[in-house]
Image: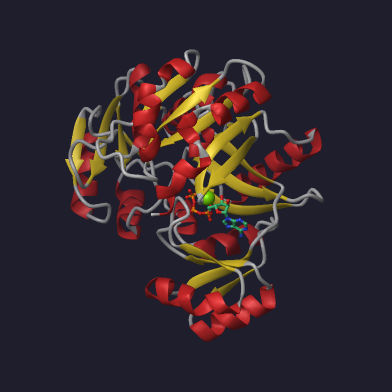
Length: 382
Ligand SMILES: Nc1ncnc2c1ncn2[C@@H]1O[C@H](COP(=O)(O)OP(=O)(O)OP(=O)(O)O)[C@@H](O)[C@H]1O
Ligand SMILES: [Mg+2]
């Protein structure tokens, strides 16, 4: 692909916070931005040069986006398969549709990861309550049943502690069948690796991130991850192998479970910048968003070195008023808010990158603040 130089327009499918942060980086470099999103005034729409208001599966919308753009990327993976196929045929869409198809469907994703020679937790497809019970018996309790499509932030999944939970879980999720049942991994840590490959074939990985979830939603990312050099190497090797197997162009985030004995299972992948990579904005030589823009435009990638330790903490709807009132508690931290107006509980409104001090000091600063007290994260389940 030819290089897309600053001054040209990058079209982004999806108007959420990931697109907004891509656009902020792109604009700093001198690019113009067009966005496709069903509603005006989205986090990205607020700062884009051109807004195309259309559904994610509207081919005419995709055509209008393509007319306004010199290259097209996406900020989330649930774009209609019809639109992805149309773009692949008719527009400069360097990332292609294959990784989108894989990551949109948990079953296909697990098959593809396994085919690449990488381990996932034991799993089984489920089409009926009987199958759910039989599979749970085979995999053992506790296990987790998930919808194959459309889940995010822990939505569309339920933990089964024993057979008594199966009927309720089936009733709640059956409308989205087929489901996937997976063993609940007794992990010691969750890790993620984000890597980027440009249209010129250059590839770089960011430092491994350690992730702490609450109620199925990412709460904190700690970098450097508190793991051995060996595990760090292994995690990056797994992500690189997947990038190779999927012929990656753009950004790939790989979520992993690390167990006490050093085994790594891949949980899921996302073919885009990722919440667990937000630390890069203030702690790395290049942010994941700038790197992604460089990659899809085919300009040289930036260095990914970690410049200082960082703890990223997410700001959900319930945290927003408290962080705004409590900024004095974090005078040296970097606040990023996404321009969403409705601060619903559990909704990602922004994040804070804490970069001053040692990791244990930064963690203690967050833990001792009233902003993220455990009992106050209640709404997150909705
Ligand atoms: N098999 C599993 N074993 C143990 N914990 C799990 C398992 N599956 C999910 N979890 C926990 O739930 C979290 C969310 O799960 P998952 O990543 O599958 O969901 P998601 O809704 O796609 O989330 P997101 O899009 O925010 O990454 C995981 O990060 C992990 O903490
Ligand atoms: Mg996940």
